[in-house]
Image 1 (cartoon, rainbow, N blue to C red):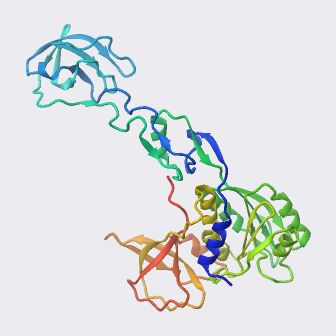
Image 2 (image 1 turned 180 degrees about the vertical axis):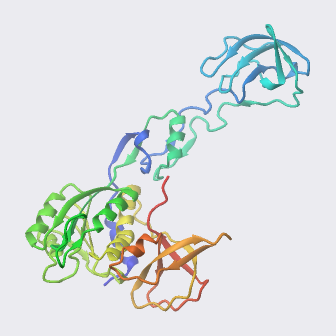
Image 3 (image 1 turned 120 degrees about the horizontal axis):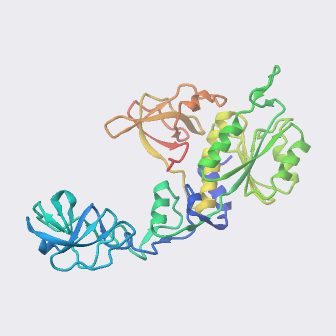
Length: 402
């Protein structure tokens, strides 16, 4: 039986980066860049008016000055002439400031009089012009390789006049659940049958973590049924099995994978919940075997599947389980010999501190507790009892969205 850190290390060392593809920026939200983004233009590309008014020479605009209007500059329609002494160009927000002008008088400080404009307000300083490149300059590095794109990033890249980006392909995560007792939601349940709920959570988590989920269906409790699912998983980057991770007479997933040429890396982890979680390599994919109990499956998916997907997207095999610090809302007893991940609700105290409230019920079959949680509090093996207010480390279940 190996530790959580040893299991993560073994998984990440086996997770090779996915291939690179080029996609339109409209498809880029949440994707991981495979190349730096460098601006191809200045933004704005030209001196632009920040206000509606008149483009002038600042030296000409003392209060009461009368200037001849020689043209107009709307957004996308620049003026045809430069501004000379005693002249002005009617300009609108976003319009290109004509040559010769170094100031825009806002229209509230002017009065139109035939072919002239009269300056009615004092102009204490030059302004209302956005210089070319004040947002970013040509050849400026905007986003680095390995960064995950947010909604704002897409706008930034578009503003840099870039239509497509190189990203890592989403790892295809094929998965199936296992067990004759599992039924679909809405079906009538016979005595001894339960609804198979894990796959719905797993599908959403794989998407949130950056993978492309592919559900293979449900395998019954027979070697042939499991072998059929393995055959359907060809071409996937990762294969996840849910259930059948133990060594009972009806647990066939591990043996069938070995028969197909898979090589077992480890079969037990010193973690609670999820001790039977296993990991194997080949043929064709990396395999994570999750227990069937909901809490065990989802905690171990967060601990081992999420960093595997991240490593394939970033190419970083040295990633660790990033935690946040919080303070316990209530005392908590000493831990056992296995590292424990406890479902908890973390909130902001209002004073800049995170408060972790660990739920009293932590049975590995309970989903209702998970629905009230947003994090997993990490307790080291044989950690001592803690008082309220003691510091703890926690993992967020899902990456914040853009």
